[in-house]
Length: 567
Image (cartoon, rainbow, N blue to C red; front, side):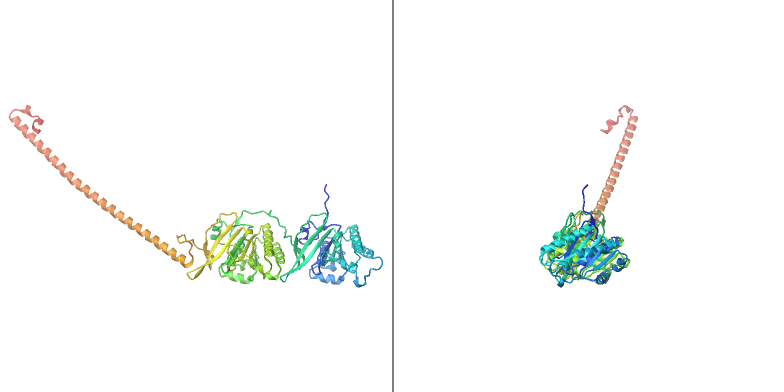
């Protein structure tokens, strides 16, 4: 059977995910970084979470007193005194004055081992923290001695079978001050705090982990009100499940342009356009539609407050206040410069995990240009979109297109990430500006290629009928004029047809009258002819009768052959 390294869960949110289970159990881990990056806090949380899991721990402080330690972590809700009273935690402060350390004679940590060993045995500790190494070796220049004692310290901790965290300060050109601590450690984590464009961001990097796979990426982390949060957001694989369910955009006719059923659940939508084209209003429809389905929606606003958005949406007939009060809609409104990009990422992901929305709206992402450089923003958005899509959450992003920028592009370069792209623009003609909407792309749907005019009304966004005249796209009053002209021309054509129909009917009636007259004339002539024939026949019969009478009188009846008298 394959032997695997046993790991000790830290209980720190996100850290166990990127270490695939925690720190190496029964081995020391080195946490190094500059002052203020969070080394001591992370080490203390490691012990507090262990105590909560009934694993006692010992904190050996070489710089801060136990009272200072307890006070410093009390703001995070950690009751150190109670844990100490329950023998789940032991704090020991060892005061070492660096200026009094001199390289005279043999130097070893034997006394330290005795003191730590006593603390471990007293509470049967499973976890140990030593904070920090610089106090022990700060003034020693004998590298061989430092390396030897460090090795002895690490081996001694391994022999005690405790999972240990040892903190160390970073050097100018190395992970640690002496540049040798990382070589004797089984696991090395580097904490960093960077300031870019006046914005600070903390990052964590696992530089070394013997016997275990680990990610080599940097991860942002946040010191929250209840501890540290690390988010594994830099290595999302494109293997998340997708849904075939379609959900409404909140605008019925827009759903029709997207194949009749709206967007796919869990897909990403980009709404871009110049200022005043209706991006936020359309986003409001997405939010209202989500809440009307009984699904939670997180609205991240970078330019407007929640109250301002609610007021503005009310003017177009969208009630976002009711779902906000019922808990279906949550606003997260702040300026982009409030945090660095990584901190924004951590905060938003934490909000998503806590609130569990089905839709997240970012309005607008173009404001992030004030919080970072182009490639930083692109990386931020890529990780954010991948994270949300992996959760099956639908995403709506708005982007302000600035003057001079092509409409079919964004300042943050994420258009290729989007599944659906709705392009809004306005058209100025005849002294008026009219709004147009176009589905630039919609993956997996047979979407419309028609540019549609829309209006903001008191009942929301109204998509107008398409003008299909020969003059191309006309909008606003010009469209109304064209439609009126088309209607008038249609009426004229109908009237012409009716006139033709009346003329045909009139001719038909004339024709039928003429036919009747001819028939009457024919019948009259026919009657005359019949009467003449009858008169002729009567005359012939009378002549024959007279001949017969004369023949009888002359006794010549044998001569009475009618043929003899009719020829």
